[in-house]
Image (cartoon, rainbow, N blue to C red; front, side, top):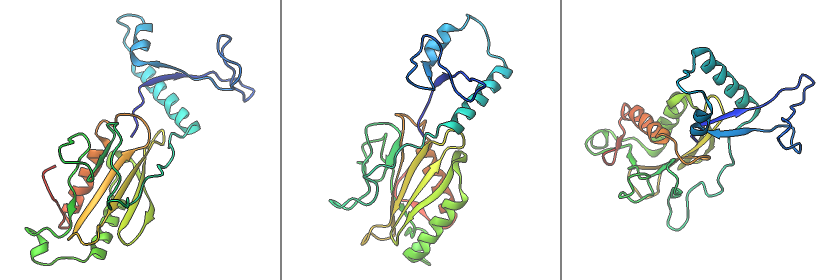
Length: 226
């Protein structure tokens, strides 16, 4: 989820047009003035607390803005199983992505793969097929909504699933992929990344953890500590 710590102001004209202030550009019908939290704080009067009514008003304005503007971003072209070597994509330098393809020494981006037939569990007693494991994963994806993000399965193959998670207010979209590698026993690789922003406040990592915890109830396990 992309992070956005901005205060955005706009001006409404009753004639269904949005007029800029005199000192703003007239080339656009809508002018957004964005200040950092620090700048906005400096403009406020010292020791003036923000009351609950103003907080609710600002939240309503943000929700209205989210309804007008959809911050979904563009689907990255590199999603899917890479060819050389076969794997999911690595993460960008931004801190809003985790992937099993990363090196385990990269603590900011690495996450361990899952095993749907762990040896210490059902793998040694009553293992399931890849098709059964895929269905278990789909069931969990549909029923689990970490941070109230709405999951939407966009692509499904025999060994691959791509899900888009959309935030409840501004429509930020995170891309989450799952891959069942051929020849690797019971292993599931995954990648979860935000399309916009530089930080996600661990939303992607928390999402993966929530999904794993639900899958553990079905017999899955992480390949390593998480």
